[in-house]
Image (cartoon, rainbow, N blue to C red; front, side, top):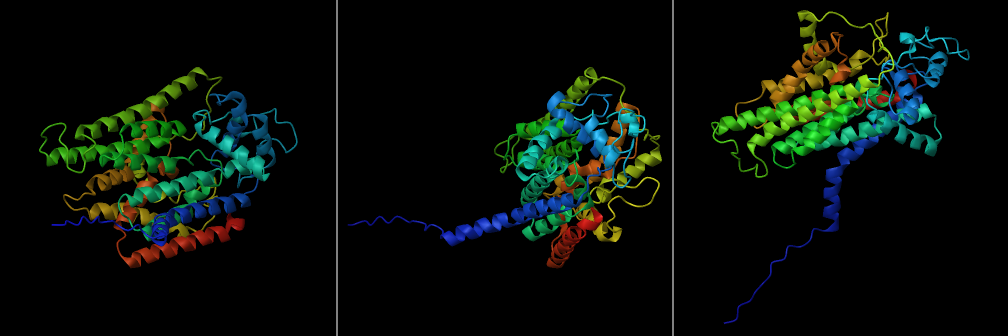
Length: 465
Protein backbone atom coordinates (compact mmCIF):
# COMPACT_ATOMS: atom_id res chain seq x y z
CA UNK A 1 0.00 0.00 0.00
CA UNK A 2 1.32 3.40 -0.98
CA UNK A 3 1.02 6.14 1.57
CA UNK A 4 1.04 9.69 0.29
CA UNK A 5 2.61 12.23 2.63
CA UNK A 6 1.27 15.67 1.89
CA UNK A 7 2.75 18.69 3.59
CA UNK A 8 0.31 21.43 4.37
CA UNK A 9 1.88 24.78 3.57
CA UNK A 10 0.28 28.01 4.64
CA UNK A 11 0.64 30.50 1.83
CA UNK A 12 2.54 33.66 2.65
CA UNK A 13 0.47 36.78 2.99
CA UNK A 14 0.58 38.85 -0.17
CA UNK A 15 2.65 42.05 -0.02
CA UNK A 16 -0.53 44.14 -0.20
CA UNK A 17 -1.84 42.51 3.01
CA UNK A 18 1.40 43.13 4.88
CA UNK A 19 1.43 46.80 3.85
CA UNK A 20 -2.23 47.11 4.78
CA UNK A 21 -1.62 45.70 8.28
CA UNK A 22 1.36 48.01 8.72
CA UNK A 23 -0.69 50.99 7.63
CA UNK A 24 -3.52 50.11 10.03
CA UNK A 25 -1.08 49.72 12.91
CA UNK A 26 0.85 52.94 12.29
CA UNK A 27 -1.45 55.54 10.75
CA UNK A 28 -2.72 56.96 14.04
CA UNK A 29 0.67 57.45 15.76
CA UNK A 30 2.13 58.85 12.53
CA UNK A 31 -0.70 61.39 12.24
CA UNK A 32 -0.32 62.34 15.90
CA UNK A 33 3.44 62.83 15.59
CA UNK A 34 2.97 65.03 12.51
CA UNK A 35 0.28 66.99 14.34
CA UNK A 36 2.57 67.38 17.36
CA UNK A 37 5.42 68.77 15.30
CA UNK A 38 3.02 70.97 13.33
CA UNK A 39 1.47 72.58 16.39
CA UNK A 40 4.76 73.08 18.19
CA UNK A 41 6.55 74.47 15.15
CA UNK A 42 3.77 76.86 14.07
CA UNK A 43 3.10 78.25 17.54
CA UNK A 44 6.79 78.50 18.45
CA UNK A 45 7.50 80.35 15.21
CA UNK A 46 4.87 82.92 16.19
CA UNK A 47 6.24 83.47 19.68
CA UNK A 48 8.27 86.61 20.01
CA UNK A 49 11.51 86.92 22.00
CA UNK A 50 9.55 87.72 25.17
CA UNK A 51 9.77 84.90 27.70
CA UNK A 52 6.98 82.75 29.07
CA UNK A 53 5.64 83.76 32.50
CA UNK A 54 5.97 80.11 33.56
CA UNK A 55 9.57 80.55 34.81
CA UNK A 56 11.14 80.52 31.35
CA UNK A 57 13.68 83.21 32.26
CA UNK A 58 15.27 81.04 34.96
CA UNK A 59 15.23 78.05 32.59
CA UNK A 60 17.03 80.08 29.92
CA UNK A 61 19.60 81.04 32.55
CA UNK A 62 20.08 77.34 33.40
CA UNK A 63 20.64 76.52 29.72
CA UNK A 64 23.21 79.28 29.32
CA UNK A 65 25.14 78.09 32.38
CA UNK A 66 24.88 74.34 31.77
CA UNK A 67 28.00 73.82 29.60
CA UNK A 68 30.17 75.72 32.09
CA UNK A 69 28.96 74.69 35.53
CA UNK A 70 26.60 71.75 35.00
CA UNK A 71 23.97 72.82 37.55
CA UNK A 72 22.44 75.98 38.92
CA UNK A 73 23.17 76.38 42.61
CA UNK A 74 20.77 77.27 45.38
CA UNK A 75 20.91 81.01 46.03
CA UNK A 76 22.74 81.72 42.77
CA UNK A 77 22.24 84.96 40.84
CA UNK A 78 20.83 84.98 37.32
CA UNK A 79 23.54 85.33 34.67
CA UNK A 80 24.04 88.31 32.37
CA UNK A 81 22.61 86.66 29.22
CA UNK A 82 19.21 86.01 30.82
CA UNK A 83 19.19 89.43 32.51
CA UNK A 84 19.70 91.16 29.16
CA UNK A 85 16.76 89.24 27.68
CA UNK A 86 14.61 90.31 30.63
CA UNK A 87 15.57 93.98 30.36
CA UNK A 88 15.07 94.13 26.57
CA UNK A 89 12.32 91.62 25.76
CA UNK A 90 10.83 90.84 29.14
CA UNK A 91 8.01 88.44 29.90
CA UNK A 92 4.79 88.06 27.96
CA UNK A 93 2.40 89.77 28.55
CA UNK A 94 4.09 92.05 31.08
CA UNK A 95 6.90 93.42 28.93
CA UNK A 96 10.53 94.29 29.84
CA UNK A 97 11.62 94.06 33.47
CA UNK A 98 14.62 95.54 35.21
CA UNK A 99 16.84 98.38 33.92
CA UNK A 100 16.23 99.91 30.50
CA UNK A 101 17.37 97.85 27.52
CA UNK A 102 21.02 98.49 26.73
CA UNK A 103 21.91 99.82 30.16
CA UNK A 104 23.91 98.03 32.83
CA UNK A 105 22.32 94.98 34.45
CA UNK A 106 24.71 95.01 37.40
CA UNK A 107 22.00 96.26 39.77
CA UNK A 108 19.75 93.27 40.36
CA UNK A 109 17.31 94.98 42.71
CA UNK A 110 14.94 95.88 39.86
CA UNK A 111 14.63 92.29 38.65
CA UNK A 112 12.11 89.78 40.04
CA UNK A 113 13.33 88.25 43.32
CA UNK A 114 16.37 90.54 43.06
CA UNK A 115 17.86 88.36 40.38
CA UNK A 116 18.08 85.13 42.42
CA UNK A 117 17.29 81.94 40.50
CA UNK A 118 14.44 79.63 41.39
CA UNK A 119 15.60 76.86 39.03
CA UNK A 120 18.07 75.38 41.53
CA UNK A 121 15.52 72.72 42.52
CA UNK A 122 15.95 70.97 39.17
CA UNK A 123 18.56 68.42 38.22
CA UNK A 124 20.31 69.13 34.90
CA UNK A 125 18.52 66.21 33.18
CA UNK A 126 15.88 68.19 31.27
CA UNK A 127 18.26 71.04 30.51
CA UNK A 128 20.98 68.75 29.16
CA UNK A 129 18.54 67.16 26.70
CA UNK A 130 17.21 70.59 25.69
CA UNK A 131 20.66 72.07 25.23
CA UNK A 132 22.05 69.20 23.13
CA UNK A 133 19.04 68.84 20.84
CA UNK A 134 18.31 72.56 20.70
CA UNK A 135 21.89 73.45 19.78
CA UNK A 136 21.80 70.85 17.01
CA UNK A 137 18.58 72.41 15.66
CA UNK A 138 20.17 75.87 15.91
CA UNK A 139 23.23 74.74 13.95
CA UNK A 140 21.23 72.96 11.23
CA UNK A 141 18.48 75.54 10.72
CA UNK A 142 19.99 78.85 11.74
CA UNK A 143 16.97 79.83 13.85
CA UNK A 144 17.64 81.69 17.08
CA UNK A 145 19.03 79.78 20.02
CA UNK A 146 15.95 80.58 22.10
CA UNK A 147 13.60 79.25 19.41
CA UNK A 148 15.72 76.13 18.91
CA UNK A 149 15.54 75.36 22.63
CA UNK A 150 11.81 75.93 22.60
CA UNK A 151 11.16 73.69 19.61
CA UNK A 152 12.59 70.67 21.46
CA UNK A 153 9.15 70.54 23.07
CA UNK A 154 7.88 69.03 19.81
CA UNK A 155 9.97 65.91 20.48
CA UNK A 156 8.47 65.45 23.94
CA UNK A 157 4.94 65.98 22.60
CA UNK A 158 5.51 63.55 19.72
CA UNK A 159 6.90 60.96 22.13
CA UNK A 160 3.93 61.42 24.47
CA UNK A 161 1.53 60.94 21.52
CA UNK A 162 3.17 57.66 20.50
CA UNK A 163 3.16 56.39 24.09
CA UNK A 164 -0.48 57.40 24.50
CA UNK A 165 -1.32 55.32 21.43
CA UNK A 166 0.57 52.34 22.86
CA UNK A 167 -1.14 52.65 26.25
CA UNK A 168 -4.64 52.93 24.84
CA UNK A 169 -4.12 50.04 22.42
CA UNK A 170 -3.27 47.85 25.43
CA UNK A 171 -6.96 48.15 26.24
CA UNK A 172 -8.07 47.69 22.60
CA UNK A 173 -9.42 51.21 22.36
CA UNK A 174 -10.40 51.95 18.77
CA UNK A 175 -7.98 53.92 16.67
CA UNK A 176 -10.37 56.77 15.72
CA UNK A 177 -10.94 57.33 19.46
CA UNK A 178 -7.18 57.47 20.05
CA UNK A 179 -6.85 59.93 17.16
CA UNK A 180 -9.52 62.19 18.64
CA UNK A 181 -8.06 62.11 22.15
CA UNK A 182 -4.54 62.65 20.83
CA UNK A 183 -5.50 65.67 18.73
CA UNK A 184 -7.47 67.13 21.64
CA UNK A 185 -4.37 66.85 23.81
CA UNK A 186 -2.08 68.36 21.16
CA UNK A 187 -4.40 71.34 20.68
CA UNK A 188 -4.96 71.93 24.41
CA UNK A 189 -3.77 74.96 26.40
CA UNK A 190 -1.62 72.55 28.41
CA UNK A 191 0.27 71.57 25.25
CA UNK A 192 0.45 75.20 24.10
CA UNK A 193 2.30 76.29 27.23
CA UNK A 194 4.31 73.12 27.72
CA UNK A 195 5.61 72.32 24.25
CA UNK A 196 6.12 75.73 22.62
CA UNK A 197 8.18 77.34 25.38
CA UNK A 198 11.08 76.02 27.43
CA UNK A 199 9.26 74.14 30.19
CA UNK A 200 10.35 71.53 32.71
CA UNK A 201 6.82 70.10 32.39
CA UNK A 202 7.63 68.91 28.85
CA UNK A 203 8.86 65.40 29.79
CA UNK A 204 6.16 64.80 32.42
CA UNK A 205 3.31 63.57 30.23
CA UNK A 206 5.54 61.12 28.33
CA UNK A 207 7.08 59.79 31.55
CA UNK A 208 3.68 59.44 33.22
CA UNK A 209 2.26 57.45 30.31
CA UNK A 210 5.37 55.27 30.11
CA UNK A 211 5.25 54.54 33.85
CA UNK A 212 1.59 53.49 33.66
CA UNK A 213 2.30 51.42 30.54
CA UNK A 214 5.10 49.65 32.39
CA UNK A 215 2.76 48.92 35.33
CA UNK A 216 0.14 47.45 32.98
CA UNK A 217 2.76 45.30 31.25
CA UNK A 218 4.08 44.11 34.61
CA UNK A 219 0.54 43.29 35.75
CA UNK A 220 0.10 41.13 32.67
CA UNK A 221 3.44 39.40 33.12
CA UNK A 222 4.88 40.90 29.91
CA UNK A 223 7.64 43.13 31.33
CA UNK A 224 10.16 42.78 34.09
CA UNK A 225 9.27 44.81 37.15
CA UNK A 226 12.77 46.25 37.24
CA UNK A 227 11.87 48.48 34.30
CA UNK A 228 9.32 50.28 36.44
CA UNK A 229 11.94 51.18 39.04
CA UNK A 230 14.38 52.46 36.39
CA UNK A 231 11.78 54.53 34.53
CA UNK A 232 10.32 55.93 37.76
CA UNK A 233 13.72 57.02 39.03
CA UNK A 234 14.55 58.75 35.76
CA UNK A 235 11.17 60.47 35.71
CA UNK A 236 11.53 61.96 39.19
CA UNK A 237 15.05 63.16 38.39
CA UNK A 238 13.59 65.09 35.46
CA UNK A 239 10.97 66.70 37.71
CA UNK A 240 9.88 65.86 41.23
CA UNK A 241 6.15 66.19 40.49
CA UNK A 242 6.50 63.14 38.23
CA UNK A 243 6.33 61.16 41.46
CA UNK A 244 2.56 61.39 41.03
CA UNK A 245 2.87 59.12 38.00
CA UNK A 246 4.90 56.70 40.10
CA UNK A 247 2.26 56.81 42.83
CA UNK A 248 -0.45 56.02 40.27
CA UNK A 249 1.47 53.01 38.95
CA UNK A 250 2.10 51.77 42.49
CA UNK A 251 -1.58 52.21 43.36
CA UNK A 252 -2.61 50.29 40.23
CA UNK A 253 -0.31 47.38 41.12
CA UNK A 254 -1.48 47.43 44.76
CA UNK A 255 -5.14 47.21 43.77
CA UNK A 256 -4.35 44.45 41.27
CA UNK A 257 -2.49 42.56 43.98
CA UNK A 258 -5.37 42.95 46.45
CA UNK A 259 -7.90 41.68 43.92
CA UNK A 260 -5.74 38.66 43.11
CA UNK A 261 -5.34 37.85 46.79
CA UNK A 262 -9.11 38.12 47.22
CA UNK A 263 -9.80 35.80 44.28
CA UNK A 264 -7.46 33.15 45.69
CA UNK A 265 -8.83 33.70 49.22
CA UNK A 266 -5.37 34.81 50.32
CA UNK A 267 -4.03 31.31 49.67
CA UNK A 268 -0.32 31.32 49.05
CA UNK A 269 2.00 34.20 48.26
CA UNK A 270 2.98 32.84 44.83
CA UNK A 271 -0.39 31.83 43.47
CA UNK A 272 -0.48 32.47 39.73
CA UNK A 273 -3.35 32.90 37.34
CA UNK A 274 -3.16 31.23 33.90
CA UNK A 275 -2.45 34.46 31.99
CA UNK A 276 0.30 35.50 34.42
CA UNK A 277 2.92 32.87 33.66
CA UNK A 278 5.88 35.20 34.05
CA UNK A 279 5.30 36.63 37.50
CA UNK A 280 4.12 35.89 41.01
CA UNK A 281 1.43 37.91 42.71
CA UNK A 282 3.87 39.04 45.38
CA UNK A 283 5.98 40.62 42.65
CA UNK A 284 3.27 43.22 42.08
CA UNK A 285 3.61 44.50 45.63
CA UNK A 286 7.41 44.28 45.60
CA UNK A 287 7.89 46.31 42.43
CA UNK A 288 5.28 48.88 43.45
CA UNK A 289 7.22 49.55 46.65
CA UNK A 290 10.56 49.39 44.85
CA UNK A 291 9.53 51.99 42.26
CA UNK A 292 8.33 54.38 44.95
CA UNK A 293 11.39 53.82 47.10
CA UNK A 294 13.88 54.18 44.26
CA UNK A 295 12.34 57.36 42.89
CA UNK A 296 11.97 59.03 46.28
CA UNK A 297 15.49 57.94 47.23
CA UNK A 298 16.91 59.47 44.07
CA UNK A 299 15.15 62.77 44.77
CA UNK A 300 16.39 62.83 48.36
CA UNK A 301 19.94 62.23 47.13
CA UNK A 302 19.60 65.14 44.72
CA UNK A 303 18.24 67.41 47.48
CA UNK A 304 21.19 66.51 49.71
CA UNK A 305 23.64 67.28 46.90
CA UNK A 306 21.84 70.52 46.10
CA UNK A 307 22.03 71.61 49.73
CA UNK A 308 25.73 70.79 49.91
CA UNK A 309 26.40 72.85 46.76
CA UNK A 310 24.35 75.90 47.83
CA UNK A 311 25.99 79.30 47.42
CA UNK A 312 23.38 81.48 49.07
CA UNK A 313 19.89 81.83 50.48
CA UNK A 314 17.15 80.34 48.28
CA UNK A 315 14.68 82.67 46.63
CA UNK A 316 11.53 83.50 48.56
CA UNK A 317 8.71 83.63 45.99
CA UNK A 318 6.24 84.89 48.62
CA UNK A 319 3.35 82.82 47.30
CA UNK A 320 2.64 80.78 50.41
CA UNK A 321 -0.77 80.78 52.11
CA UNK A 322 -2.15 78.78 55.08
CA UNK A 323 -3.18 75.21 54.33
CA UNK A 324 -6.72 75.23 55.72
CA UNK A 325 -9.20 72.32 55.49
CA UNK A 326 -11.21 74.32 52.97
CA UNK A 327 -8.13 74.91 50.84
CA UNK A 328 -7.24 71.24 51.00
CA UNK A 329 -10.72 70.18 49.88
CA UNK A 330 -10.60 72.68 47.02
CA UNK A 331 -7.56 70.87 45.63
CA UNK A 332 -9.77 67.88 44.78
CA UNK A 333 -10.93 69.78 41.69
CA UNK A 334 -7.45 70.81 40.55
CA UNK A 335 -6.11 68.06 38.27
CA UNK A 336 -9.14 66.33 36.75
CA UNK A 337 -10.82 69.31 35.10
CA UNK A 338 -7.84 71.64 35.07
CA UNK A 339 -4.65 69.99 33.85
CA UNK A 340 -5.53 69.74 30.16
CA UNK A 341 -6.84 73.34 30.11
CA UNK A 342 -4.16 74.82 32.37
CA UNK A 343 -3.52 78.45 31.51
CA UNK A 344 -1.78 81.43 33.12
CA UNK A 345 -3.66 84.20 34.91
CA UNK A 346 -2.37 87.72 34.38
CA UNK A 347 -1.65 89.35 37.74
CA UNK A 348 -4.08 92.15 38.55
CA UNK A 349 -6.46 91.08 35.80
CA UNK A 350 -9.05 88.44 35.04
CA UNK A 351 -7.51 87.85 31.62
CA UNK A 352 -5.45 84.82 30.65
CA UNK A 353 -2.00 85.00 29.10
CA UNK A 354 -3.11 82.54 26.40
CA UNK A 355 -6.25 84.31 25.26
CA UNK A 356 -8.05 81.37 23.67
CA UNK A 357 -11.80 81.68 24.43
CA UNK A 358 -12.93 79.57 27.33
CA UNK A 359 -15.86 78.01 25.47
CA UNK A 360 -13.46 76.71 22.82
CA UNK A 361 -11.46 74.60 25.26
CA UNK A 362 -14.14 73.80 27.87
CA UNK A 363 -14.98 70.45 26.19
CA UNK A 364 -11.45 69.29 26.99
CA UNK A 365 -12.35 69.34 30.67
CA UNK A 366 -15.64 67.60 29.94
CA UNK A 367 -13.78 64.79 28.18
CA UNK A 368 -11.55 64.20 31.20
CA UNK A 369 -14.29 64.52 33.83
CA UNK A 370 -16.79 62.39 31.93
CA UNK A 371 -14.12 59.82 31.15
CA UNK A 372 -12.88 59.35 34.71
CA UNK A 373 -16.14 59.67 36.62
CA UNK A 374 -18.13 57.90 33.92
CA UNK A 375 -15.79 54.94 33.97
CA UNK A 376 -15.99 54.81 37.77
CA UNK A 377 -19.79 55.05 37.91
CA UNK A 378 -20.24 52.42 35.20
CA UNK A 379 -17.78 49.98 36.79
CA UNK A 380 -19.28 46.58 37.49
CA UNK A 381 -18.33 44.14 40.20
CA UNK A 382 -15.66 41.73 39.03
CA UNK A 383 -14.74 43.82 35.99
CA UNK A 384 -11.21 43.43 34.64
CA UNK A 385 -11.07 47.21 34.47
CA UNK A 386 -11.38 47.62 38.24
CA UNK A 387 -7.65 48.16 39.00
CA UNK A 388 -7.12 50.83 36.35
CA UNK A 389 -10.45 52.62 36.85
CA UNK A 390 -10.23 52.75 40.65
CA UNK A 391 -6.55 53.77 40.73
CA UNK A 392 -6.98 56.54 38.13
CA UNK A 393 -10.12 57.87 39.82
CA UNK A 394 -8.34 58.02 43.17
CA UNK A 395 -5.38 59.76 41.55
CA UNK A 396 -7.60 62.28 39.77
CA UNK A 397 -9.41 63.28 42.96
CA UNK A 398 -6.90 62.84 45.76
CA UNK A 399 -3.38 63.27 44.39
CA UNK A 400 -3.56 67.07 44.40
CA UNK A 401 -4.51 67.23 48.12
CA UNK A 402 -1.84 64.60 48.80
CA UNK A 403 0.79 66.68 47.02
CA UNK A 404 -0.31 69.79 48.89
CA UNK A 405 0.19 67.98 52.21
CA UNK A 406 3.58 66.68 51.09
CA UNK A 407 4.74 70.19 50.16
CA UNK A 408 3.48 71.59 53.45
CA UNK A 409 5.15 68.86 55.52
CA UNK A 410 8.51 68.99 53.73
CA UNK A 411 8.84 72.77 53.29
CA UNK A 412 6.52 74.25 55.92
CA UNK A 413 4.77 76.21 53.16
CA UNK A 414 1.77 75.75 50.93
CA UNK A 415 0.59 77.40 47.73
CA UNK A 416 -2.38 76.64 45.48
CA UNK A 417 -1.12 73.97 43.12
CA UNK A 418 -1.03 74.82 39.41
CA UNK A 419 -3.11 72.29 37.44
CA UNK A 420 -0.05 71.59 35.24
CA UNK A 421 1.47 69.69 38.17
CA UNK A 422 -0.89 66.88 37.20
CA UNK A 423 0.85 66.39 33.85
CA UNK A 424 2.22 62.96 34.74
CA UNK A 425 -1.29 61.55 35.33
CA UNK A 426 -3.05 63.35 32.47
CA UNK A 427 -2.55 60.40 30.13
CA UNK A 428 -4.51 58.18 32.53
CA UNK A 429 -7.52 60.54 32.32
CA UNK A 430 -7.48 60.14 28.54
CA UNK A 431 -7.21 56.37 28.96
CA UNK A 432 -10.47 56.23 30.93
CA UNK A 433 -12.09 58.61 28.46
CA UNK A 434 -11.16 56.18 25.70
CA UNK A 435 -12.65 53.29 27.63
CA UNK A 436 -16.01 55.06 28.00
CA UNK A 437 -16.47 56.15 24.36
CA UNK A 438 -18.35 53.24 22.81
CA UNK A 439 -20.71 54.52 20.12
CA UNK A 440 -19.98 55.99 16.73
CA UNK A 441 -21.83 59.23 17.45
CA UNK A 442 -19.54 59.95 20.38
CA UNK A 443 -16.50 59.04 18.29
CA UNK A 444 -17.66 61.34 15.50
CA UNK A 445 -18.23 64.24 17.89
CA UNK A 446 -14.82 63.72 19.52
CA UNK A 447 -12.90 63.58 16.24
CA UNK A 448 -14.79 66.54 14.76
CA UNK A 449 -14.18 68.69 17.82
CA UNK A 450 -10.50 67.72 18.04
CA UNK A 451 -9.80 68.45 14.38
CA UNK A 452 -11.64 71.78 14.62
CA UNK A 453 -9.75 72.75 17.79
CA UNK A 454 -6.42 71.84 16.21
CA UNK A 455 -7.22 73.92 13.12
CA UNK A 456 -8.33 76.83 15.34
CA UNK A 457 -5.03 76.82 17.23
CA UNK A 458 -2.94 76.81 14.05
CA UNK A 459 -4.99 79.45 12.22
CA UNK A 460 -5.01 81.78 15.22
CA UNK A 461 -1.36 81.22 16.21
CA UNK A 462 -0.23 84.61 14.78
CA UNK A 463 -2.81 86.33 16.98
CA UNK A 464 -2.70 84.20 20.16
CA UNK A 465 1.02 83.36 20.31
